[in-house]
Image 1 (cartoon, helix red, strand yellow):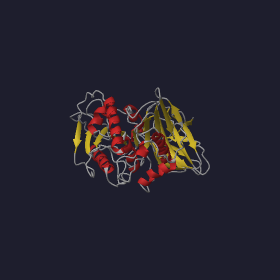
Image 2 (tube, rainbow, N blue to C red; image 1 turned 135 degrees about the horizontal axis):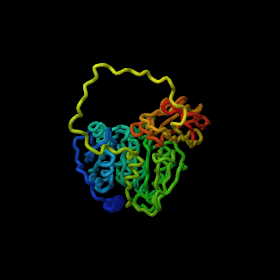
Image 3 (cartoon, one colour; image 1 turned 90 degrees about the horizontal axis):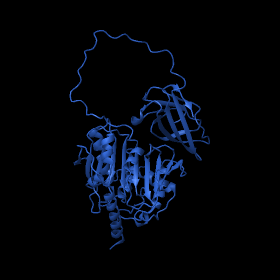
Image 4 (spheres, rainbow, N blue to C red; image 1 turned 120 degrees about the vertical axis):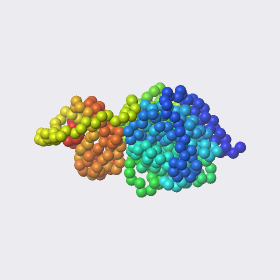
Amino acid sequence: MTLKTRMLGVLMAAVTVAAAALTFAAPASAATLTQVTNFGTNPTNLQMHLYVPDRVASRPAILLAMHYCTGTGPAFHSGTQYASLADRYGFIVIYPSATRSSKCWDVYSPQALRRGGGSDPVGLVSMVDYVKQRYSADPTRIFATGTSSGAMMTNVMLGVYPDVFAAGASFAGVPFACFATGGTSEWNSQCANGQLIRTAQQWGDLVREAYPGYSGQRPRMQIWHGTNDDTLRYPNFGEQVKQWTNVHGLSQTPTYTDSPQSGYTRTRYGSSGPMAPVEAISMQGVTHNIPVDAAQVIRFFGLDGTAPPTTPPPTTPPPTTPPPTTPPPTTPPPTTPPPSDGTCRVGYTVNAWNTGLTASVTITNTGSAAVNGWALTFTLPSGQRITSGWNAQYAPTSGAVTARNVSYNSTIAPNASVEIGFQATHEGGSGKPSSFALNGAACSVS
């Protein structure tokens, strides 16, 4: 028996046990898992199953959920809670299936590790494109997650298609390109054994080389790994952290550390908030049979904030009222400016290094009415220039900047907050803006 066969056997056995451990009662919903064929370019003959909840949110998000070796999309559907959470929050889940004999994803060939190169990633992104077009999905809210081989493919998809995915969650995986074998083998023992150690810059360069010339925003990443993983060993956890912090231009020193449950250590990089650019959870004593905390994944993706309607839309339109025969009187716009203080508060935290920084910004609505659609204006200190951002759209990238809401955080209820942030370069000055205004009203600064 070859080393490759033995190691694949170990991986398959471990994740099969993991799948059994994750099984839960099916949700009481009429929605069913449906196979989709002819979804687009599919060079490796992948299979696609789709879960669309009974009540889909307006402009729904998409989750690409990828199975372990020996698994299938339907098995990952029944063994995880993503469908149940989709029922609650109205997003759509794609459950793809690999079809090669090992049922492992191609995370090793040169074709898979470059944009548009072919193999599994091309078929997977075809599935995403199919759902985007058919269900008018929100292109800014597309996510990927997976376990074991599916976690490796999560790293690959975020590296090859950074313009498609907003974030990913990797359970017991390895860094992007760690499993590269030149296409001659499915198994890379050096990587699996945690012996492939590189600098953060080297790992980051591998991601950047997958899509040369791309300068847009990079996906956020959530990384989970057990310290006792003897299939894809624990050093791969730290190597993933090195890779994705470098991709985001962040220090490897966490900005936030806590223990969400006994034996778990959670670190965040670039922000202390729940949607930091990189979040990593080390699980003491956990093997490759890793539990999937789907609720924490959905929280990190930002999909747990708005539930779909609790009743189906009406089947008949409401009665219409004829327009008045005379126009209503017009009221001139008010001539008084908006209140200057008391309706918003901004917290602004900077983490700076040699020529770069990240800024974490918390916007709190301290007024009595909800803010529906917002624009935060501020002036960056001279020499600072934004290179990427999250949870907002930023323009221009220097000087007087306006950060505008994205689709999923457009409303700020009274006494509620949203967290945004950005990465920037600087020329020796890492200071903060002196003032902020939300929709034209000055904010207090904390």
